[in-house]
Length: 204
Picture 1 (spheres, rainbow, N blue to C red):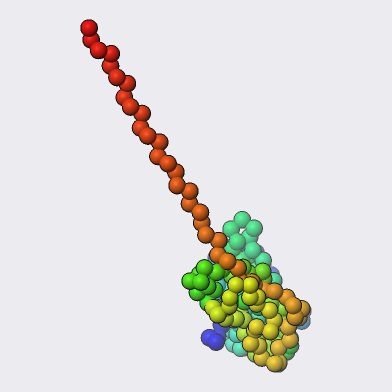
Picture 2 (tube, rainbow, N blue to C red):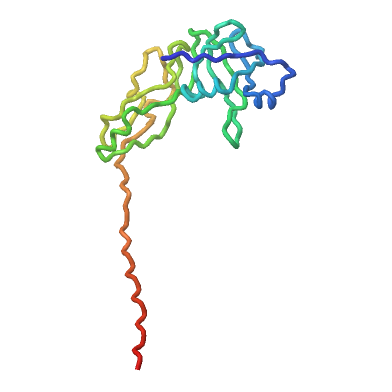
């Protein structure tokens, strides 16, 4: 798994959030181990967006702060309700041996292959609730579904997880089910015959 590194800069109390955003920065707060009081910081918007796009809103990240290399994860991203731009982020610092509980995205590998069998995967949940060591937790959980047949479901036991992880979802939780693909019914529209031109009366 490629490392995600977030460059974090100090933020002065005089720096107004709106002006920071116009300058290409996102206001943020460092909290967690060693930062229990919360430290106001700022991050480059492009840097943060790349990480969120590639690894999700709860991405685990290496944090470069004042020459220190810290480990943590993104938490509580706030977005503008009109354009979905990130306006603020909490960054939680922890040790790699800390147990953390997160909801990880699920990747249903091979879902598109079901179409060849006239089947489709109906997804009921895109997230799995899990606890594990911070240094071991993946950024997402993958389950292969290309070999499933009509009526098959994806449940907790279908995920090949490390024994050190604990899933909090009930064992009978259905994350997805294979159903028959809905075919688009195209109705043929009969062409309306063209009106015949009016006949001119014969000249007498």
